[in-house]
Image (cartoon, rainbow over all chains, first blue to last red; front, side, top):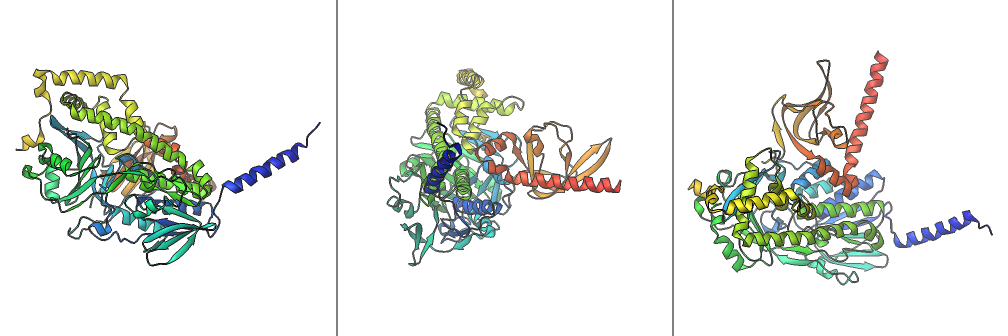
Length: 474
Length: 121
């Protein structure tokens, strides 16, 4: 029997079309999108969505809800973050045509200085070029003098606004489903309907938690507490003591995963990341001579502004639903590093899904969820990498070996910079943790590390370790 | 005020025609000029300003620089690594949209100039 092939395919096509129309919800001209939160994730989502919509002649209305003005100094205008734009993000933004203005970059960083009890060593960027940006999310610390610089978040919000996003200065109090639409309710009682809600309010907002009721089987991100504070040192002191270098501490303090002092204009920002940073941990950190040596005269001044923001350490599951998607910290981010870079990547992946596919849960599952899973899988490797780092933190002989290997690599310009590259990418967040981990399995890396472990721990070799710059200054 | 990238002095060469390359550049501040060197003579191909990129052909296979690029006055330029760029495009193909758009505009400009030259000749 000969089947009517054309009709058969036609029926298949109709069924496929029916399935597609059931599972996909493409946007149309005039569709309305609410983006809640104008941090980097929200502003970049708005900017890239409008950019992509323009390229396919799709007319969308994007409302960007943000009650804060980033021109304010202190907590009122701040998004509570260490404020480092990684090397990889600086490059990607430049490729997109977004050059960070000079008045947004507080300082261009050229190197990392690793501080340990066995000595300090500076790891310079291979190209001797400033490719890491120290920025303020708001407009500077509490009670700071008016500065001639501007907020990073404010700059991105301005980009989104210039692209056509409408900034709504309202605090969103609730998001709910209403028939085939999403409803956004503001603190003043006003309610508006949208075809899509993009949650970009971070993890320090109560709204994220309330969404657990909205999306079935939704699990909010797992969080941990961090500590960030600002020291006023003045430009001259910063130039002499910290220079254009981010200072990273590898200290034997339990639960401390990462500590960095980031120079910015007149101020230096200190970030402590780990497993629920508390007073005891901070006392041990501030009591370390390695930390005191970074400050003039070895005296740590009183900080003028501080906060305990929570950070995402496990992806929300799933970070989407029908007509709902979570970007940046609200959804997923990289473990401990490059949160702004993860905001860019998730915001752009969500914008691509919305512009070219649709806004159903199936659309996001197919086109957005793979990136979240990729970041999540990399974070699992990152956890292992940080665990290995904690072993190094606890073992003095290992710290000597690491210091020796980096110091030798930095002295020999032509030699492969294996340990320097691993630490650079680990500190800067410029490469995936999986990439960093795989490089540590290279036989040449392992061989060099073993040689340096032996050489650095021989008694007569110890004096070859790099001298402590703090002692030299004294 | 703080800056990113590397500063080049007036007429300082950033890339030289014929040299191997494995990165591209984005102008952050100031201007640069792209010059083709033919039989010892220089011909300006184009002038580039903030946000313009150059050296992109090295990312897509052609390893040797097709032109010399030097600073016009003081210019600040950011380097984009080949690995970083291609890794980004692999994850997000739309990262190359702007570049494709600019490159197609450059082909259009060259076609116009070629046609103009042909008509004059």
